[in-house]
Image (cartoon, rainbow, N blue to C red; front, side):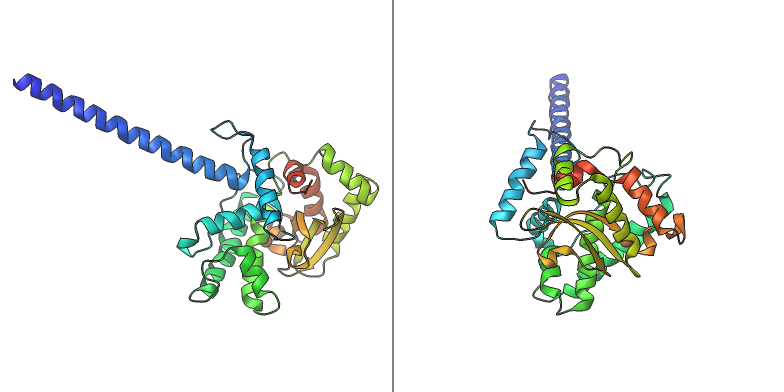
Length: 284
Ligand SMILES: [Fe+2]
């Protein structure tokens, strides 16, 4: 009788542990799916769906919604923010790679300061400035668009939060190299050649007086253009879709390159830029 009771208790314990393990596994799968949706890390998700195709569907949804100038990743960020709007807080997005992954072109120290101090501060300031306002619970793109020309402090914080999130994803370890075919055709059409495009983008980054951003954007007509913005400005406020950005604020490169901004831009274009990501930001 006692032995039977012990066996039953052991069986109940084993079944309980199995259930906990399954719950933990399912939670990890759900987290992995979210990260893949936001960052596009993998080609296929755990359900075997092609992420690129899914991103394309989401892009169409964003465009149907009438949001102009919003790139694929930024559109996903907007949708993701709305999905968790109940928290009312803009989240600090993690880097899509390790702090040391861009060595030796961008140091671990630069990435730690840039992400954990500068970018995180912009997000914190955004949250502080929207607290108890009509914009509490809105996504970053909405906050940026509504504060443009009406609330400079909030616009700066929100736009810088967006700009940095986009910038992290424009880079990857072992980046640079050949430009994928669809993007190369668009570059050739708009600039004549890849060499001319590279020359113009580098000149834009080097020519910004003070702090700002150099961008490759897609216009409403589908053409590619190079845009220079000052301070925190993001081309979305001009109804242009960000395709690629280079942060040329000194905090992005000064620890590694001091006053040699051109060397940092060369390293970005030759060794770091994630061309596959850039191509995916284009509309068809
Ligand atoms: Fe920055």
